[in-house]
Amino acid sequence: MLRRYGGFRDSPHRDSANYHGGKTMNTETRVGLVLPVDTIRDRLNRDAEFLLTARFWYCDIRFFIGEDPYFMRIENGKVDRFQYGTQGFDPYTINIGGPEETWKKMMERRPKPFYHDWFAASFHHEFTFGGDLESAYAHYYAIRRINAIMRQAVIESRAA
Image (cartoon, rainbow, N blue to C red; front, top):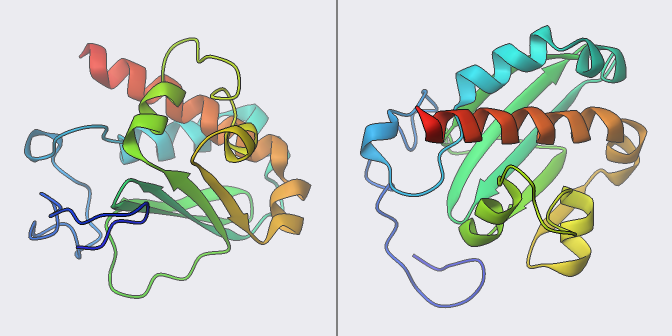
């Protein structure tokens, strides 16, 4: 499999039944950083700050951690769907991601400078923040809230 940042690598997840199924991934079968998609979706939909800053927003966001894709659909300011994997063709408006090592540094309890924010990381590290930037900038506080909730959920899942 061709890696985004050069070289070849066989993904340990590509033959998994859930890789192309778009279902919630069993974390016991995955190695490395795993996003607890159900927890993140539920917390965002209960988070008053996110709901306020994301109101009237319709967006599809693709997150990638190394070779692993995640897709989030936001409809009218609520997370309608957040899933690991792809169903072959998943449209997205905003693209956020990079190597797993960068994500791990971003998901620390107190990230170092320029790992604290996806936009900052895109300027200073091997990280992508792209797509419809007009929409991303208009809802930047909602995107920052997604990052904060995601970090909190990852930290708690590591402790469990």
